[in-house]
Image 1: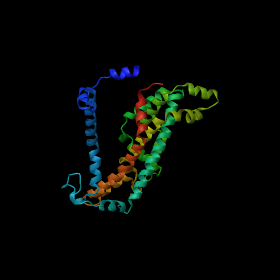
Image 2: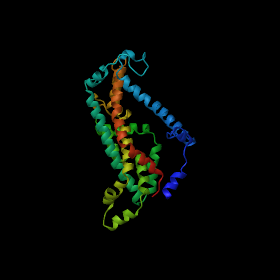
Image 3: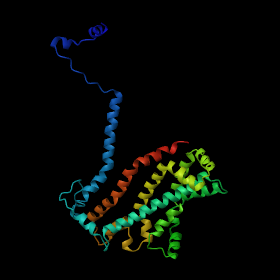
Length: 308
């Protein structure tokens, strides 16, 4: 009985009564918030297109012959060719491209390992161990952020030259294992200070020392910060030009940034096609590294303002 009364009380469209057909469903209108969302979506698409356009242009420019550089500024090449890739793969100065790529990879991976390990150890000491002169040493470490790199170039070169390490990778890798990157040390110190000390005290009661606490308790909890440091260390080392220019003299030891210069210095005229193609190849590992670990980078930066 109640069901039949509910059915009879339901409103019936006049159009449905006249035509005998159900009334068409009306589409919901976009409210003020809906239009704001659409506008923001369009703006973000436009900004993304502007940001990615240079990368897309670089990709298509790798298929342009040298004759089109300077005359064809458009996106698409008029006479596409793969000669640039063939020329780059052959290498330059008697060194194949894979050797330059391998040198950059060795320096970048070694820099990441050294920076992450040494910075984490130094940060643990500053954040968890109480010793005399802690405040002074920490202030001195922060002060090195204000010290220009060019001030220490000559003393460092003299030291490595006396050690007969010039024209090797050691001048580029050894400082990374000595926690010389104050930015990363400071970043990890902030992360470790946010962690509650209850876990450290519980581990101490169980008989764990500083090494066990650092390896089993602290490191797993600061994983986002470690990956953030690894991303920046990899990008900075991969794109470093001044360091390899100072310490490496043999072409077979050159990384990609130095190899790119050779395409412009080999003759009186620059090989723009090969330079653009080599630049795009050098950019691929950085993009892949960033895309794989970007989620951890966002997590690491987002937790900087949180307190434990």
